[in-house]
Image 1 (cartoon, rainbow, N blue to C red):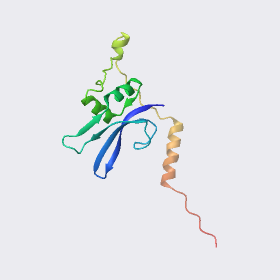
Image 2: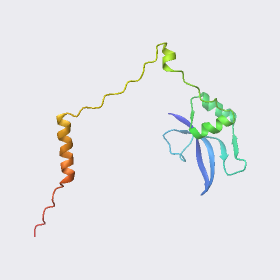
Image 3: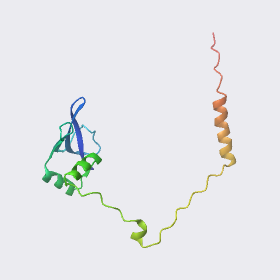
Image 4: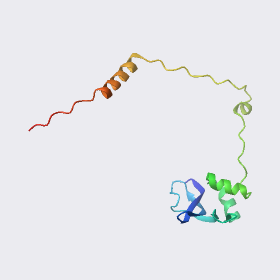
Amino acid sequence: MAVVIRMMRAGARKRPFYRVVVADSRRQRDGRFVEILGYYDPMAKPYAFKIDEEKVKGWLAQGATPSTQAASLLRKHNLLVSRPSRPAKAAASGDEAKPKTRRKPRTVTARRARNKAARVKKKANPKKPQPKKK
């Protein structure tokens, strides 16, 4: 079961309020969840964000992946380490970087040309409707 830390929308129309929850990744955004970690109120000035740090760290240690919005909020509050930079493939393998080559354009074979001509012909001349029998 892939577990994610995501924002679950609550509140009235045009008055969003979000709960930060742990949920199965296959569930709907506002569907069943495993645990509530905190809340986020973007309408308050300044915005209100309250979360249980111990629970968040525990779920992250167990392998829960935060959604992009949840990760952004967790990063702002120093609960999530910033994105790790990926090492370049050439540096990791020790080989020299190969230049990318462009693919050759596909050549049109006789069979492809016939198929395309048949498709164009069908579109240009649709079958005439049969007259209704009396």
